[in-house]
Amino acid sequence: MAKAKTAYVCTECGADYSKWQGQCTSCQTWNTVSEVRGVSSNAKGARGVRFEGFAGSLSAVQSLDDVSLAEQERISTGMQEFDRVLGGGLVEGSAVLMGGHPGAGKSTLLLQAVCHLAASVPALYVTGEESLQQVAMRAKRLGLPTKDLKMLSETSVERLIQVAEAEKPRILVVDSIQVMHVADIESAPGSVSQVRESAAFLTRFAKQTGTILFLVGHVTKDGSLAGPKVLEHMIDCSILLEGSSDSRYRTLRGIKNRFGAVNELGVFAMLEQGLKEVKNPSAIFLNRGEEAAPGSVVMVVWEGTRPMLVEIQALVDMAQGGYPRRVAVGLDQNRLAMLLAVLHRHGGLHVSDQDVFVNVVGGVKVNETSADLALLAAIVSSFRDRALPQDLVIFGEVGLSGEIRPVPSGQERINEAAKHGFTRALVPKANAPRKTISGMKVIPVTKLSEAITALEEL
Image (cartoon, rainbow, N blue to C red):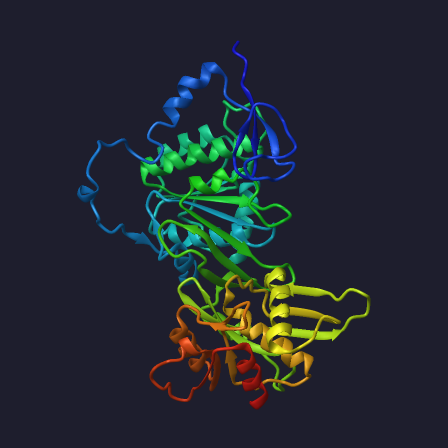
C-alpha cells in the first residue's frame, strides 16, 4: 500500500512546508503551521479527475470580447436585508460562506430563507451537527413552512454529492463545513486538509451543476473564520453574522462578494419567530434620551451602498492610576490614540492625564475614517462637560496636520440626516452641498481648530 504524503500547512495563508516550524515565513504568524495528511498515490488519479474543471465546464479558448454579457437572473431570499448583503439576491452556481459565533443565528437565518424558497425552488438542507428532529423542532417553533424543504443528515461529502445528483436541488445548504469529511483524506473532520478538500469538492459541484451552495462556517476566539484562509478564496461570497448574546440585534456584513458591494451591512432583530429584518437601521441606533448629555453625538457612516446614522459616545475622566486608559468599542483603538495626539497638537486640549472611553451605540463596528470628526467632538463635549445639540450631525476625516478631509458620498449623508429630522450638520468644506437643503444648516470647516470653535458657538 502506498504511503500517504504528509505536509505542513499554515492555517492563515495556506503556505506549505516540508517540516513543522513555529512561525510561518509567508505571513509572519506564530503557531499556525499544522500537519496535513494528503491523499495516497493510489488516489491521485481520482483526485485529478475530481478537480478537473473546478470553475465549471471546460470550454475552448475565446476572445474576451466574445464572452456573453447576459445578466444572470438572481433569486430573492424573501428578505431585503439578506438580498442587499448578497448583492441583490442569489446567483446560480455561486458558493456562499456564512460565518459567525455560536448562537449568532446562522442556522436560523438560513433555515428561514430556504423554507420559504423551497416553495418555488428545489432546496436541500444538509445538517451534520444537528439531528433532523432538532431542525424540525426549530422550524416548528419558528412557524416556518416545512412541506417542500428536503432534509438530509450526512457528513460524508461523497454521499452528499450522490444524493444531490439524484435530487437535483437548485439550493444546497451544508451546515457546517467543519464536520464534513472526504474519504481520501486520513485526518479528522475539522482539520485544515478536510475543510479545504471538502469545500473544494462542494464548490466544484456547485459550479458544474449551477447549484447555489451555502456553507456554514465556525469562527475562532479572535473572530476570524476557522480553517485555512484558502477557503475564503474558493468561494464567491463570504458573509459574517455578528451580534453579542446580550443584544437582540444581529448584523450581517459582507466580507467578500464577487456579485455585489463589499462591506454591505444588513440588520436583523432576534425575536421568538426568528430573525426579522430591520429595514431602517438608523432608527434603532438613534434611540437617544430626551435630554442632551455631554459626550454624545450622531455621525453618518457609509455601509456598503447606503448611509446609516449611528450615535457615538465618549467619556473623559481623570485617570486613577499612573497610566491613562484608552478604550474603544466599535472603533480602532490605535486610531483613537492618534486622534488624541492630533487633538492635543492642533486643538489645544490636553488629555494625557485623562482616561478616555469611546463607544459606538448598538454594537456597530465602524471601519471608515469618516467618524474621526464626530469622535473628537464627543471627546471635547465630555471633557468640557458641555452637551451638544441633539439636532446636530457630524462627519469628516481628520488628518495628522489638523485638516478636515472630505469623505465619499457627502451629499447622500447630509440628505439621510435631513430625512431623520436633523437640522444642523458639521461637515468638511469640500462636502458642503452646492444647493441649500431645506431645513438643514450646513457648517463647513477646514481645520480642527475651526470645528472646535464652531462647537463652542452652537
